[in-house]
Length: 517
Image (cartoon, rainbow, N blue to C red; front, side, top):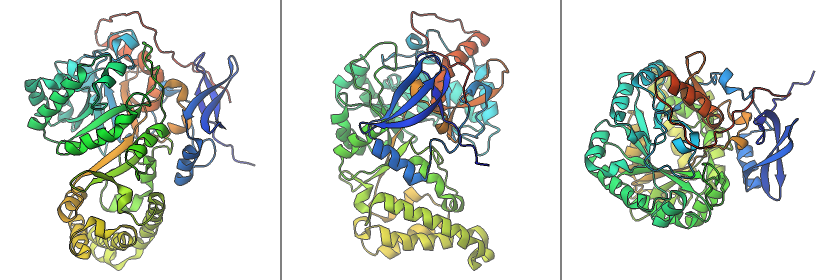
């Protein structure tokens, strides 16, 4: 009897019903094609580059419409996967209310400002998870809550380190910035480029640019750790500014560690904005055009490095993500500017990655029988892995571009440092010409018509919430949160005594719990 293939599901844009979906290539683009019994056939664009979209699947060995799937009935489910990254809505108030945003009062139609009792319940649950997930406090704009520092400290009391996803406006206040950074919370800082016109077009707030620059200067004064810049990117908005934004990250590399790029969607919020929507592949091409030689690969590919991850106790936040979700690239500073990682390789980046994955699998078998492992346990594993990695690097990396003096001695020191438990980034900075590394990630926030169940099952990122009926703290994959968010947060607001502030805004449709095989 033939094995039944998983069915991929999506949402009918017209009626919100959960329906079967398939991928279809047309005119070089990739679409989700949905079969709704009531509304008929509809399509949703998921990529402007079908070839690249398919290549990502091939690189990860992903076959068919869905390797795994689910019903997309997320309210009836607790995700089933322990997330490595948890988002938590703390408010939907905002001091900007950008017209492209889905997560503020004008877009949602009510006010969400839960009490500390709610956060106590959520953090108590998160504190029971091992290993502890990274937690990002989300909004709206978290800094509009005067008790944000209390929320961060409450998280700490349960062993949770919180990141704050912020537009940065309030951090232009030097004293407030100092108080917030004293909590040692990390920051995800929204910054769309150095052209003030960007903020006029998509934020309708040209003053935001100067306030953000002031905030970054304050962060430099009081920083406890580096920030991640989050940029909403789109053609005709800031595609010509991406190269300058990367240069900005280099100029501020003492406070900027990473750059997350989010494809813009023209109709996210309740107010129409005259812009063109972009997909992941569009944003990748913007970066590649600005910095030739840059290559992206699916972040989910990192889950295949099981042996190296285990031996060196590495934690990969997006390992296991679907191949058509997040994509990653690296840039390395030569002291003057950031250069694409490919500059330091003797071969194509994807070829190097596939060879490294094969090497990791071989290592897993080798460590089971190696004498050093038998004699000295994990230390032996690190020595064996280090030696194998050294031989791999000699074949793959242009040592003359990376090291001054004897590469063998420098790499030996790096591998010894790893065996002693030191951080790789510190060792690289100390023993090579690569003084700073900028991680770039294309990080989509889904619109409801592009959600597909095949991408949810193994998703390592989820929103935490209180179920409106059972009262239990549960998790929902980030991509499906937009389907159910308003329903859940409205009920949470009522329960925790927050008076709703109704506004004249259209609420997002909630998908029906009906589905067809």
